[in-house]
Image (tube, rainbow, N blue to C red; front, side, top):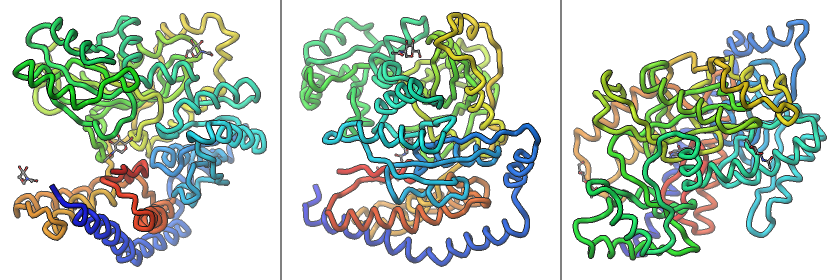
Length: 508
Ligand SMILES: *[C@@H]1O[C@H](CO)[C@@H](O)[C@H](O)[C@H]1NC(C)=O
Ligand SMILES: *[C@@H]1O[C@H](CO)[C@@H](O)[C@H](O)[C@H]1NC(C)=O
Ligand SMILES: *[C@@H]1O[C@H](CO)[C@@H](O)[C@H](O)[C@H]1NC(C)=O
């Protein structure tokens, strides 16, 4: 174990070195941004031309769209897409330093008050409602993080009841149903789709009973129901070799009615995730990709390969059976059993493909950046404005089952990375790890990481940077993150990892 003193030194070193890194790279990023701005002046980008062309078309009616969550790459990607389609985009987020605020795609930016335990959700809901009324917003595209999932459901219900504004967001009941792991699995099973064996656990006895009753060669893992970060990624397989060991492990988990867990069948095999936009039960936009616990590299599966088709089919069935008015961003995590796989990301042709959904996120997934060069994305969202009102449409459900609209897919097979993440993980950490008291580095490992970094730099695309709109990147790495590191130094709040795409800091 590392002593508290060493930990403190590490905390300072980490924050100070990242501050120095940001300062050191400031001239370079500034130069790149200026160059981009100048080039944009001389030759407008295709996206800019597309916007102008769209606005000049004669019956074109620009809509006003509110995108929340523009401090994150996913919100930014959606905002840019609406801008390029010719619409007026208003952005909002919880931080006054959100990188989206400097994007040229936004005509205005607002800082929202974050729902928290003291204030509740009232202030947040009021902020959005006022914004929608003052700016005469036609469509609210909710792209928030997990922290305001249920509040967003409340906002949707109030907005649609009181204003003409439509929302890309599920209602409260649906959001809760999908968000919570156990209710999601139960619901999925009830609509006739395959699920892994799952139990909700509130006591030690219950785990032991479930394990005793399960088929003999089946293994399980325990996951916290809520957003407990400390136990994320704990992949201990249960039952262990002996009952005693199993019991000892379970006792470390503090299982109780107040702190429920789920016990889920373990499936050995690769993990995939999907992102979809669903409007009234119809999937309008879809992509699928290989997933991992820490996902910072995004590459879509080949459109229409056997696995991609199966993932889309699952999503379509799920959405169609959810009832009318089922509108929002929908993303799933799946496991695919290993014996069905034939090498990396391709399915054996003769295999009976069984997908095991393990989680659902009723919100936008960062994979939405894969649609960056797909101008049809904005139209997919706006189709909600022409949709008949689901509450007046008794037959909406039946109609959607039979409809065979093909969803929009990413047009280009671009792969995405985040330069800040890769720079630290693939270059600085391997180079300076010995200084950070982790002397464990082989030369081949270093070489592999460096070559990976250069491959990303040359062939992949950054999730934040656009030549047309370079300032958010500059702001993210030279204002937003330095301020976070500075605050961390001042308040002494330690962090273990950060997510540059969602700008989330994991405390420890
Ligand atoms: C960053 O956030 C995205 C979206 O929530 C998530 O999929 C990804 O795993 C996170 N990455 C890390 C390194 O935490
Ligand atoms: C919430 O949405 C679901 C379908 O998405 C619908 O069946 C349900 O009636 C809605 N609930 C409320 C309270 O509006
Ligand atoms: C050191 O590196 C090796 C191989 O790269 C790895 O297997 C091992 O787990 C590492 N040890 C620590 C303490 O990180």
